[in-house]
Length: 435
Ligand code: ADP
Image (cartoon, rainbow, N blue to C red; front, side, top):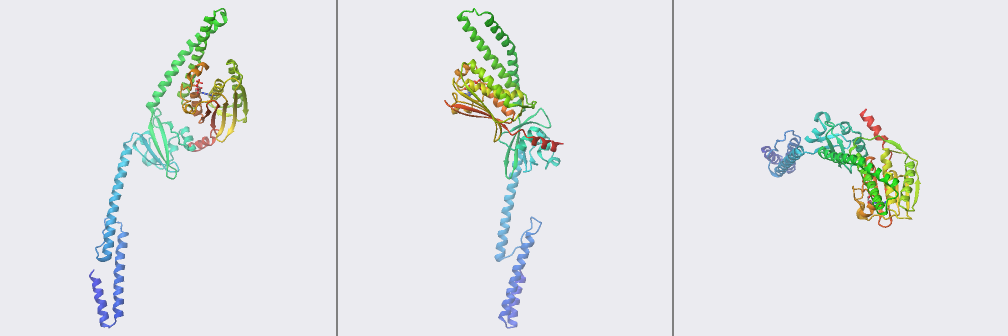
C-alpha cells in the first residue's frame, strides 16, 4: 500500500515545513485512520459480495493476519459444508433405496419429504403433493380417526390408495415441534397368510359343526330314551356328552375368532343397551352357577343408562365371556359384581369376583389363544381357552381395551374400557375435509 507510506512521508514533511509536531502527529493519525477505514471497507465489500470465490485482498500487518484467519475459517466452513452436503446426499440415497416408505410431515400434517418407496405406495407426485395435508391423500376413515386422535403408540393398517389389494402398516413417530416421521411397510404377504390361516380355521370349524351337532343330538336322544343304561355305560355316556359339548364350544369360539380376524370391513354398528345386556348376563351367570352346583351372590351396579355404539353380537359376547368366566373361577359362596358406568376414559363395563385370582406372571399372557393358567382346572370347567382372546379382539375392534387386575387367591377384575362415544367429531371433520 504505497499511498500509506506516502501519507506517512507527507505527515513528516508537513511537520517539518510548518515546524509543528502536532500537525505531523495529527496528519499521521488521519492517515492511520484512513488505512483502517480502507481495510474495513474492503472487508465489508468482501462480506457482501455474492461471489463465493472472491478473495480478500492481500495486506500486511494486523489486518493481514485478520484477513488470513478469516480466509482460513471460510475454507474450513466450506469443507464442513461440503461434508454435510455429502452426508445429506448419502442419507437421501440410502432412504430412497429403502424398501420401507418414509415420509416427513410438518406440525400441520402436510407433506414435506418422502422417499421413492413412499412415492410408489401412496402414488405421491413431487410438484403436486408437497405441502398437501396427508389426510387429503390417504382418505381412509380409520386413518383419519387415528391421525386426529394422535395416539401413535400402535401402528395402523390401511390399504394403499393406488392399489387396494396392497396392505400397508404405518408407524408414526413424533419429533421436533409436532413434526412426524411415518414409516410405511408393505404387509400384504403377511396379511394374506393371516387370512389364509383364519380362513382355514374358519372352514375346518364350519365343517366340524354339523357332525358334532349330529353326535350331540344322538347322545341326548340316548339319554332321554334309554334311562335303563347300566351305571358303567351311563358314566361313559355323560363323559361323551360333556366332551362333545366342549368340542361344540371350541368350534363356536374358533368360528367367532376367525370371523373377528377376517372381517376387516367395518361391521354394522348399533346402539347397544348395555344395562339390558348386563341383566341378561346375570341371568346366564345364575343358570351357569346352578349347573355347576354353586351358590354365588351376583350383584348388578348399573350406574349409567348410556347406550354403547358397537357391533351387537360382539358387545354381548364380550360381556357374557367375562361374566361366565367369573362364575367358572369363583368357588361356592363367592361374590361377583357386574358394573356399567361412565369412567374417565369413556364407558366402562367391569366384572369383579372374589374367586381364585391369577398370579401376576400369567396376567400378560391371558389373552393369548389357548393360554391357560391351570389346564386341568380349565378342562373341568369345559373352557376353550379362547374366551379372553375373543374379548381382546372385540375390544380392539371397538377402539377400546381390556384391563385385567388380579391377585392370586383374592379375586380378579376384568374391565372393558370403551373410549368416549366414538368421535362424531372425527366423522364430521372427515366429512368437512373430504366433502
Ligand atoms: P377358558 O375357556 O379357559 O376360561 P379364557 O380365555 O376365557 O379361557 O381364560 C383364560 C384363562 O384365564 C383361564 O384358563 C383362567 O385360567 C384365567 N381366567 C379367566 N377369567 C378368570 C377369572 N375370573 N378368575 C381367575 N382366572 C380367570
